[in-house]
Length: 284
Ligand code: GRF
Image (cartoon, rainbow, N blue to C red; front, side, top):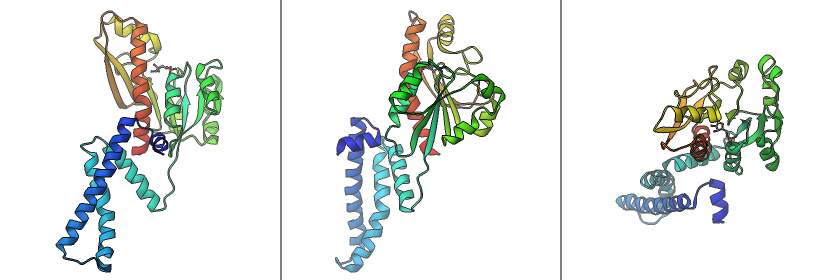
């Protein structure tokens, strides 16, 4: 049972334990506070007592749990959790986000994103899009039984930019994870503020046309930078110039080769990209 919950919440065992402690401490402090308030009213355990007690506890419980979650570092988990409970109570349909991942290469980022959202209740990876028939990411899609779409230059840049095909797959959010073509305006207009990219450097440095993969890392090393990192940003009509969402940094040693730096950057990407996507989509 614990395993199933841990998987459903997609958290580490440490976070799972902290969540559990928050539930326990929140629950017991809520019960104590509830009895304390009712004692102030000097009520016997009568029908009236319970008529007041139940709504009181219903209000106190989320407040206690949220308060306790702050020192335990679980505020964002509980904020999302309570929002979901609240919308279920109101009978609202959960808003599902359907993700398309665009990638041209090996797809290690795509793999991490797919893994993160495998059993997610509101985020589903519904399509993998690639401009290269031989891209590794297509194997990953197949292994995970995710539909794929191979795109061609002509339709992407001069046709409808595959908007109709994406809509057919119900895509509501696009993640570029190592996608090497510029995104045409038609696609940006069809998905306003719904396309994000990850760049393997600290933008605005080392971005723009031709700045991808090893070219970025070579330039960083050549300029003797002490620090590099990743930038997750919205996509607009200019290469790597959209609004920043998140950055994380790593040290660049004087002895680092572009390959070693690429490895450090990949670690950062795998750690933060799926997490930031979830944060973005659950905060919407
Ligand atoms: C990543 O480093 C990403 O920042 C860049 O392309 C690379 C893709 O790697 N845009 P992978 O295909 O996800 O392994």
